[in-house]
Length: 265
Image (tube, rainbow, N blue to C red; front, side, top):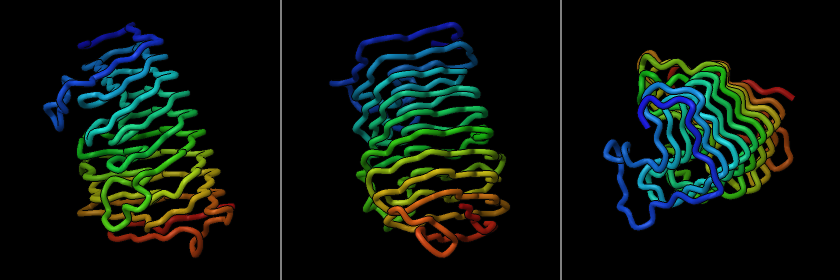
């Protein structure tokens, strides 16, 4: 739908792309399983299952509310969910082989999600090169990561961190993202991975995080040019039951204009 408002896709029901060819990169944009392009408000998707998408499962450029969906994708560049400013996803299960949730807008929320991370994407992606990708005042809470197929992919800094950012545009400003009550039943590769940060990233908070399986690789923070990362705070983060601190529990690697990570009880 183009420029759609007051539109609902509701189930039970399955949208399947089985038998259709993969559509990577920009060629895949018209072939998302559900696509609301352009401005739009009062968009609702609930109760459906999406499987074998040619590209994204659910993508909107407007204000999208998503509830009680199950999203499955197996190819590289089969992403889960993305919405415009003020969009939300809650009470859902996601197992896709690229980014699960894209936090690219302002005032977005993700609540009560169960995530199975495959090998190619991040559970939460903050940006990938667009000047308009400005995650601001976003909230992620009550997330369960039940499996991570990328847990051993620690040799290169790519797209495997739980909270990921790559190729940030110089005009992008990411400011005020809170992630709280996160539970990891499995080992993961990295908790945080920010690479090629050319804009501004600040006020990122993790609160009440239980990493039961541990973190296998180094969390990394890397800026380029005038890019900067500041005010990344971890509060009540436990790795294998042990509180994380500046000297224990998590490994960090930082280059460029990166302020020290801070920790709280």
